[in-house]
Length: 616
Image (tube, rainbow, N blue to C red):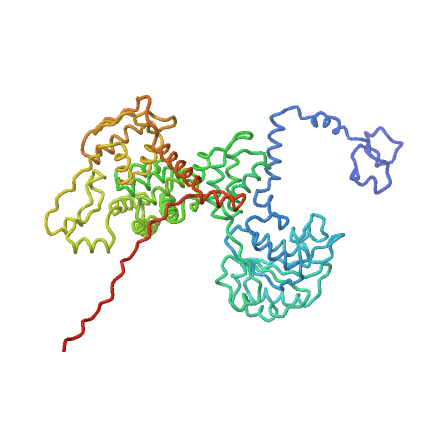
């Protein structure tokens, strides 16, 4: 109280308006609720958020904060959701149905095929308990009493340990101490050890006895990517399941379903590229799909070219053309093709891997047919045609040279230069004979063909033949086709598989004479077909060829002629009385593929040598 105070009636603590007590403690002392603060009034109009741009920014921020990657969002929650592992699911289903459940499971496979997910599903199945299920069962639902806690890793009876960060014997000793006690609320105590191959030798040894004779309430589930590093004494105590790589066709369908559920559109060929890059791993495929879906705006379709650029892959059609140029010995064209791919961002290591895949596909198609390559139909047909035109010995030698080239490309300071040197080496050796054939030619004094000088047009090739030849060899006569059929046969002899397929499919010959061809072009024919055919014929025959694609009223294409011939042959076989009798005897039977069996080679009999009796 001061001399200037005007209020002398009240107590001293009412002299000014300073709040002496925290406003939040009013209720504790029984004071009436405080009046609404005036600050709350202007808050009301802010709730409407009239500024649209600001609201969109906040929405995007919220979406980013709550976003969950596809690999986690679509993690399988039941055994039916597992793709590509039907054999394992069938075995486990029968085991659980008959009550023959092992006490330890070993799950092995490459990355991303579902080892950890299967381990968690097994833990749920062992402790499956609902209103209608009271025993171990693979029929998992979303309403199990322990499912949510197990999938979240929070169940006290299911212990999941990362063996990569808990490698010592002390970590295993903790498990051995707790395994003696019964489960608290679940049916079994389940121990999941991921990356179990990282455990030390002492840790494995400490686990042996308990793993051999565990308590009846304990189950062990191990997962590893390096099964060879797990001691055989551990493997012999577990039931082993090898999780396979997911087939590309199955993975493409799976990725397509997920893209549809996300409301995104992506081309099927783009999904095939992702599946190929994933190498059978579902997690890798989903991670790449996650990256691919953001390459286009919402509502737009993700293009194949965009995914190819994202993955740093070369167009498979172009790498097949590169492989064809190499096998035909056209070195300059092959080098230009590779430089074009490299300029578009293709990885030299990936290009070499593609060439290895093409060599393998051509070899497999040569033995088993185009369907064995698991490639799109047009690519499979072209590689099958290449395999049919190239000897198996040449394909095998090319495979060995490409394997060596792959190692060189990885170690070279400039990988692109290493690929170019490998292309030169491969094109030069495309026509070189094998060791056995070379020895036979040397013994018979025949010239040793090979090298890319005649077709490459730029030096190289022929050096080995020149050094080994004892005398000059006359150059072989150049081919001189006199009919259109001979031209097609010549293209096949030169291993120009792509050109041969185009000529057979798109060319309707109108007139032909040596040095000039007029034909009618079928719709869809390549624009450069006439120029390319003229250049190849001039290179092979040594004369100028005039090729014109402006004719009208051309004859049938080679493909059409072959189809008619096959149809006539089929009609003739169907008209055979014996075939008709067989079809009538077996209702519903159909005539399948018609094959011409090679005639049996009859070996002439060698008469026994009759020895003349010695004359007396």
